[in-house]
Image (cartoon, each protein chain N blue to C red):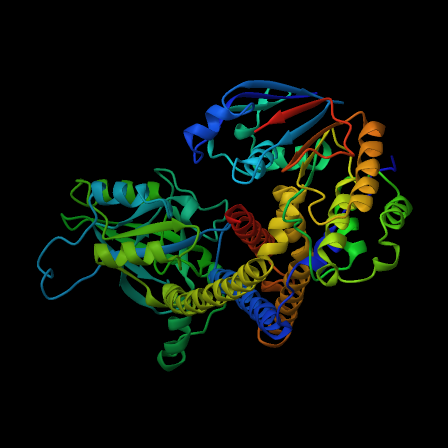
Length: 398
Length: 213
């Protein structure tokens, strides 16, 4: 008895109908285009997510946004401050990592810049938990009895001051020199008495659009100069992994909360772009499905035309399991090639996109995202499994 | 290795025929190495019996067991395994690939579970007078030639039993004798059993037992 030889697709190939090359070519080409379109859409979706997420000033991978209640003609007379329950609810949202109220002064504060700069104005002060401040120097501390009060000043206010300073014969100030200006904070109590503190601008913040003092100072001041009762905050600072995320946008709109539109404009652009790309992706899924369907028609035709031969092969002892596996394996290299071509084309598009259309090239990798590679593997497996189950079913029907 | 028939009754056969039969509705054991001749007139279920044994049809009551396993209960994959390695068959209607050459028809069976080298298949073809026909399409051969192709094809695999359904119906006495001789040689080489169903007793067949269906 000779050694068993390995039977392969070649052994049975002549007994199977091979069909029209043109219809097969269209199903292959359709599949390649569909897969490429789908992979490109997913990659583009990820690109948009990465590019628009990284635009905002971030601290340890978080975005910080200031939230107020929208003031409309209907609710103007009501209390539009945040209750403790409102803040707790904000904290509970999965897309919000933390939230802290911005405390404001409940007493009158007047700021003057001493004799060097003849400038004086009524001022508001706010405080927030230190971890919400982007530029926090170690000197930003205050204890009762301390005459010096450290201040963190909004970069926007400094810019505004520098705009109108020349017309008022005031000196323009840089971020560094502003720290050297001696500021006098005059705090007035409700009974008319006042106390002067020396203020120092210890940092300038891009994030917080306000004049920030240590929380200990403001709490003490409100107790000492104000009426002493705790007041709810009119605005809340929110810490989130992505200020542009769609669920956050939806939540804020639903609660009628107001945020700085500029800070979340990328969110709106991103939502629109991602919707377009998702629509295209849906179309790509349709193309892939149609191609697989076209190929499955070809397989059905092939099996139905080869029905007599296949039935005789089964009668002679060829195993239906072996036949299904062998016929499926025959298409593996082809499907592999189609997926690799689609991947290569998608990589080419990503490379060209990163090189030619993205301003800050370090923001985006020129290579495909891992999810795209995984998706291509999943598509390959799906095609092979769809073929296998179809062939198996058809053979069982014989 | 044995085939066991326990009260096998075809669902479609008349009661009188079943009552007159030595096989239907009774018990038989065919052991490996035995040569059984089944003789019956047309319409008494010869082809059905061969198909029941080969697992191609299940329209019968009772049981047929191969090595204590019910043939009826085997799935397509296990059945394929039995057909490739344990049961060989010569169909009454031959079942050849008509658009393929004589050699292709033999090789497609030999490739599955080769018992012989390809040269042996050609030698058999020579012996049965098909030497010059190997590259001819099977469909263009005469019925007698096609019957010999089916016989040679059946002898390419290992088997414990060879099932034959009127295998010499288109052959003259001389060619039938040559073919039977070859089949018996091959069965002996494998220690296999022969189950041959025909209208009349085959004179060239040295059977151990003859049963009337």
